[in-house]
Image (cartoon, rainbow, N blue to C red; front, side, top):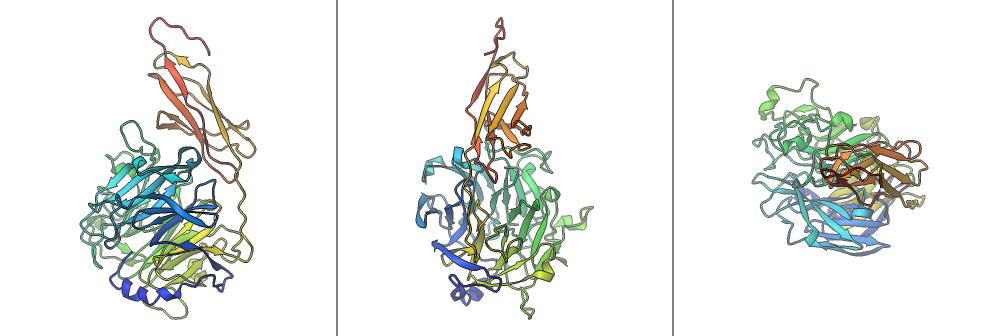
Length: 497
């Protein structure tokens, strides 16, 4: 990543500061996971926290199982790398990975566009032949500020961050961040499951759902380069570190529901300061105002151990009890200073401090399905944040969804009663079950106290239905077998079967 021209020269002096296993002032240490070639992101399947999947910038996707690294898939012929910020940016494993094998990727293609794609793993490998483009975001001629994060939200939809179009240090002429007629400078939300001929669907509740496609995918706007973002399920929040221009690096955090339609201010604002304000929309600020950052810092050393740098790299709210001194704190780094820092979200400015850990040329943080947090360096190292108490990950129990119908034959245009039952039931009450017709999501009713969910979809033609339940803290994801509902032809009568 090259957020500023000064980054490379400053970072060279930081590279030697990556301290393997060094204990910080807050009791955390860095435990080596392995060495890779420009690692950009790390995560794990929902039910397999010990199986780490690592995205390398060139297009290699590696996996680490029981400490041994191997190749999941080689996409170097598809990913365009490595001019400025181009390359494979990140990946997200689908909540139903155990059943579907789906992994979603964010990378740049030969034309410099942002591509969100799906690939399907089978066992311990994935074939490039399964690659499917979900969304292409046309990009400007520049090769930086791609954003680059894909992440599944707590409701199971896919969120994507995009940069504002890039350029040099003064990248104000593109006018993208404030415009709702472009996908650049945004957070997007889509359901990547295809709907007939469409490669994805737009979930209900998107704030601009009435806009023409693809702009109905916009979730929030006014971002410069939201290179990384994360969710904090215990607080119900989304956390967006946004790389600044000449004045401020910022962290935005607010409830996920409140972020729908939120305007984070760029380029009318840069953090809490006035921005270049070259976007025409700056003349008419939103009625509720711009979202203010919960934390920001400048590019000059303020002294006294305060934060500074050139490009914020964030970050997760740590929810790993084994790292007691960081648990509940947001961890982040800066590409130019090598210092890993943290703060308490309830009082960021008053609690921000160094962890005592250093990772030169930090490219990203990541999180596995057990809640353990990782940090990686462009130089190749991937570390896990560890505490004095060993982290123990409970194995998820198997789950099952059965799908039945009151009748498997109905009159054309009438409704079919579908009944999904989830087992085991303990602790599943009020969870949601997602119903699909073909590949299209048609509803998400809650389980009742007997772990049963019902739907009555209209059936205009013979259709196939499925029901899925997402992974949670105790159980694996599961999907039902397909259930075919036939439509009666003239003269036939209904019989239950």
